[in-house]
Image (cartoon, rainbow over all chains, first blue to last red; front, side):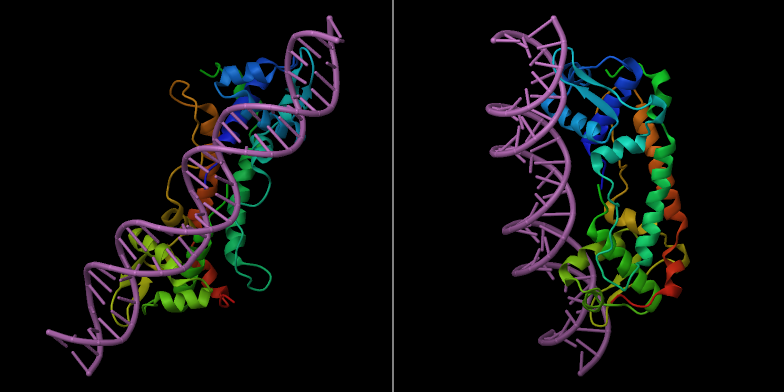
Length: 133
Length: 133
DNA sequence: GCTATTATAGGGTCATAAAGTCTTTTATTG
DNA sequence: CAATAAAAGACTTTATGACCCTATAATAGC
């Protein structure tokens, strides 16, 4: 089990938006160039971030993507959930009655991780942001 | 990203060993029957648990698997690491200088989860164990 | 020492998901 | 209406998960 590369891209793209361009829309083209990844692939992740309500898209000339929410409100967990989905990391495959004790433990562990990621805002890193390369 | 089903099986197999058979070796055949999974598949996980030093294998007649370590010492994390490996869940794919700030955050989050899983021993559930089915 | 039993190792298969490309459609500005 | 930009969908390729099957090695009991 691993976080997908897509999540990695999305986190870096969001860090760029929060750090460098809080207001003006940034095109996929520019973002993809900054990150060194393909436009078409990156645009899929950006579309997910739009659907999650984290960023806003503006089509047409001078369009692109810009933050929708207050930049202080956007957590790591928001971004990760937008890309990876919100399903639990563990699902017991046996059907022993109602609740699996093992599952309860692992899900609580997962909750610990998510709590940390929810309290950590992407904007906290903006000050130290030195660009991607 | 998800925990593999193999981890699910391994956790349940270990819970069985800790609860029902701390000393006597249990064959894959019996274990697989109890869990309702195939012998050949389950045996791969058990072999991993042996290599991780959690259980001991005894081949030949009346052989099988039994705990190696003190049952109070075996944590959820031990079992998960044995099956999933110990590699980090997140690896930044960009090469910005030495350290990626994003990666540091996610790895710390992962550490939170692992700390919980390390403190949680499988033997804690043994008392409440009512069998698999 | 032979046989039955049991783990170990390795390869093969099938399905699903991740990673990435390409093309078409839709929306917007000037 | 022309240029720009996002959104959507189909497609390929590669990797991983979830299995099965067979052969080999070790051991206990006779």
